[in-house]
Picture 1 (cartoon, rainbow, N blue to C red):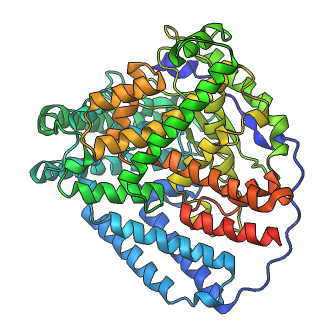
Picture 2: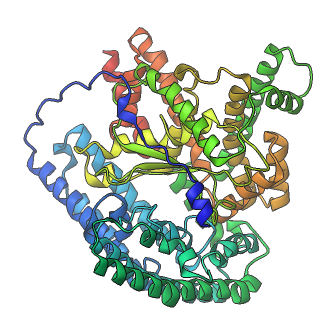
Picture 3: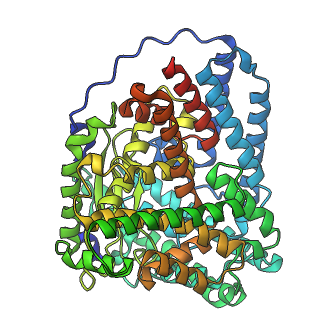
Length: 598
């Protein structure tokens, strides 16, 4: 573990070094109307209470007032507080006279109302009975938080003391999780066996023999030089005691429960629809993740249509290349003639740095505004790399923590790989790092919007960003362009397999076969993906649905505006209000198209 962490190469990059015209100076905002002031007060009260309820989120966005807290958000008391906040805020919003608001104020009012109604709807389903899975659950994310590589700061003595208090909160969270899962067993709301099997190794990796090998000990190995010897000795002893007396026993207790009690009670079925009330629950998840009213059947068909369209584009590329074999043979030929892949983590990261250096000079052709937040490229930690895909973690708005593009380099020594241009565009620039950082840097947004997000918009934008590669001087190699098409195909396949798994009775094996046959991907990577969809239903639908909506809005703007269409202005308009539900985004952009056409 120590060697693994030491080998992770850090690449600190400033996105602000791109040569792009400065944004025009905005005129001072006119005085707020009485209704607008009322609305702003509602926004602020809501967000302040939300931060109190979710202190980890507060830390993530750079608000450190609650760094000593870790809420048990799966507990009955906390869920009741959530419901109260959502209900009261909706009542307050309903009392606002929206006719006296500006168009932008109405946009934010509508966005928050929609979000709160969705959250109220979510409370009807017993998600709290399924608190542990191989990704996106606190026991899996907590080691990153405590390693010094996550959002919790380790700069001052108080920072170190605060995390010791969070360890106490984690103990209570795990106790509640175990109690909830026992209740879930009684009610038939349990995880599929494959999810438990994916999760167990990650939990067991935290049960180390020597506290110095724990990820939670890493901050002690990097104690700031300005700490006094007394402080260093005290914190070292406190962390050793906390790891040995709390962290390790808590993970051991959770792992033992999962292996000896929960695993035998986990279900052999995998469909969310097979849970009690699961049919309606999955429908809700589809609506929530896609921010549309599309039904699972409609999404399934869109997926099949997109698979056909992208396959045709691949065939056209094969024909232009003069290759007479099958697509699978063409893919193999391209990979065989491509530049040599990387066989070490360090060299892979350098490959991604080279992509950034290519993209940077061309950003000004597509965007009028760029963010200033820095980011790092790292390889995913060993304990989670077998279950976690490459991913992005956002920067803190105060600049104290960069955005992080995590690259999965599992087994690279024996299975060399290339730096993927489409993956960089998706996770970093102009994808997640670009969009999320730009949103968080816009201080004129209401804070719930500045720090909020919708998967369909965020992932839809990132997938759309992959299509901009040629304009950013990428995809010159046929292998990289084919890889980009396969990346898009992968997201189209997700529409099919997610609905297939959770609504149409597909087995895990059938879903894997469909994905392998369609995307020409290997079994191990496909298994990781399919198990992700089993554990986190409907989330994977958001990518393609969001990208299709953004692309259709662009096509409409290009057709309507003709010579008036400017790609820089279009992109800036899409991004300037932050992530939005797709229906609200479309309405906003329709108004922009109409105004621009005059």
